[in-house]
Image (cartoon, rainbow, N blue to C red; front, top):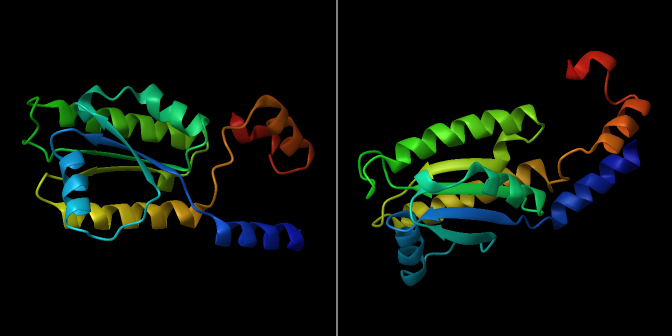
Amino acid sequence: MATARKEKQEQQKEFDPKIIAFLCNWCSYAAADLAGSSRLQYPSNIRTIRIPCTGRLNPLLVIKALNKGADGILVSGCHPGDCHYIDGNYYARRRFTMLKDLLEFSGVEPERLNFTWCSAAEGRRFAEIVRKVVDRVESVGPWQGFLSEPDVVAEKEAGEIEDGEFL
């Protein structure tokens, strides 16, 4: 038990999280561009996916990103009331809240999923957001993936899951 704990601590020291960032074309992507052109330092852990509007982000893309090995997710859009598509960011906020609850119920730590607003003029804020997201994801360690049926059975046999825990 103690050796497993030491291995996990060593693994977290070497851990360099992969974070997928879904950024609104009009605001958050422009903020990332401003941060880069202003030479602001922020971790290079994010992989940016530019989308027209966070309101058009399909929640399945977030699940697929986690399934493909992403350690964390950042969704960033326009501030409320500033959406170029009028109310897309409101749709995104509702969808993301529901998705976060669903994934938390499925065993995904809430620190892995992050939603924020960032305007095109907030390059410094974007850099700070990325630092905070990387710190949050590092705090929970590498993503082990969703549990499959054999994993649940193995954990149950090892006594890690009680019989009534999933009811």
